[in-house]
Length: 143
Image 1 (tube, one colour):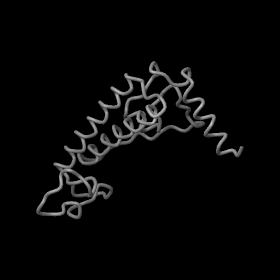
Image 2: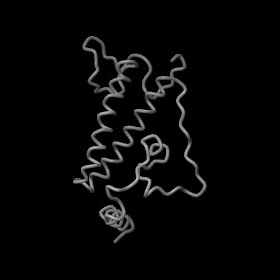
Image 3: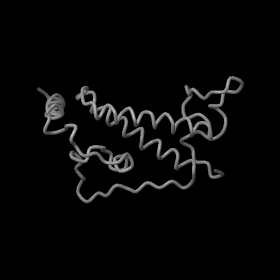
């Protein structure tokens, strides 16, 4: 067995261990989880003296993108958890809440600043909005 398979086998074994992750676990807020890179407080392990950066938005557009990124991250973390624990109803409920919030934040952002992705639902039939204006990853100093 090579090291790659050993890592994956142990990871999966630990993930299925109810003492490792269960519905009684402690979760960070989406903001704190996004900053730390881990939504699950009970398995977070800080690296040496590293302190995660406190992310700060400089304007309304960046604030909206940051909040969307935090919620998207939290939903994705729960999605990974649910891949292994598909019957955890409390986490399914939380996952659905985060996905709903993600859709709301995306719609609000796109109404105000334009599409986040090329396949957005908020595309205008007369103009291909994706190529107009500043793209989501570009910094617009005029906003």
